[in-house]
Figure 1 (cartoon, rainbow, N blue to C red):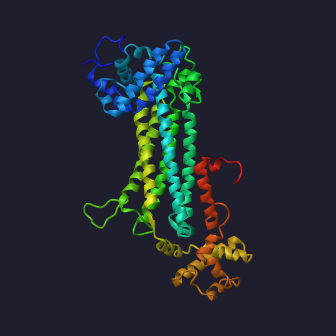
Figure 2 (spheres, helix red, strand yellow; figure 1 turned 135 degrees about the vertical axis):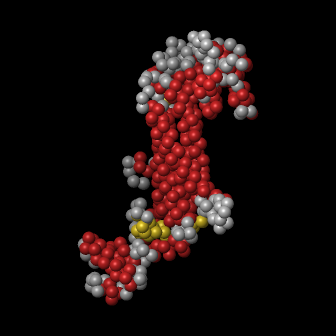
Figure 3 (spheres, helix red, strand yellow; figure 1 turned 45 degrees about the horizontal axis):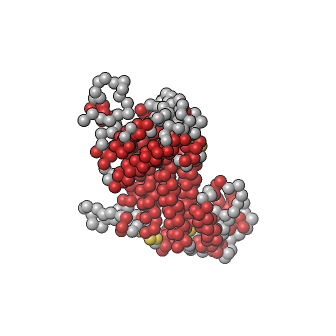
Length: 472
């Protein structure tokens, strides 16, 4: 059966079947169906204001579009059974079966170029809202877990070497800060998504008085685009989203890597719930952190989509080129991947269990309180650099004796400096070491409780901490 096309008057030869398959986008751009119908209904109202449609014609078109939408929601696969090359052709063809020639009249002054640019923005705005909601749920899960383990101590690491003791809740809130920045990046991307290209035509604008400002307002955009050529060829907003997605996935991947390590028998700091782990087909004892490994692995996939579209865009002449069809599969996959990964990490956090005894045991080893010993000497008026050097020698001695700094006798300390007295052991206590770091951003319980309150406030208000001009 000859295929329905929105073009063809200029062509005399039949379309090559392989080219048709190569050229078509319906298999993936059907994701834009809801957006295309929403934009088409708004455009019908704009055509009525321009005098192209009568009120009756506009109402008939809107009714037909709603019917097409309802039918596709009840049978999502029917669109693939059509003979259309893309979602725009499908909507026009399906609408034609409902309202006849009015479906063709709807295309007055409109091009697929400004259609698809508008549809993408509507689609992405809706998806960004859902991802923002999922991010907030993950932030709440982190805050809840941090609140449930207020005194659990874990080694903090640099270079993957034990460095200083911190509260596990403080560690979790570090990822909360990252996710808050991610949410801010998403909102900044949404602001740039919210500019409407509809009414730009193919590239030069429209001769019909469609009142683009009213049309933008009707569709919930902040303003129409100011240049028709840029309006149909701009995909910066997709790149903005993909950049946000890449940074978010990087943060989720780092968190996944930590949890994979902490879940291993070598660390045993925490346990993943059986419901989000898998086993081995050969080794019955295995419990694999597949959920976290998949998040870590999918990060590269999202990076790839960002770089693929950057590469597509770098050599395009003005204005629309078919290369831009490559934006959709990358975007749709990135959206699905981010949605799924944020949801998966939330499930991991909500269901994992910590092992406080193992965490504390690890924190007591490796001389994590060496800095406290240096601070003790500073309190005795020794310059920090001098104290740092001296404590390094003391650590070497403790390692030779096979004991911790807490276990080293006072006489050993005094052989290094007469400044040492019984008060040094209070400085070496891990809980006290943590409580001394009570300044804003520190790991003391008082500071962490304050950070949790701030995090919850920012989840509710949507104000990013870094965007404020004053301290709370």
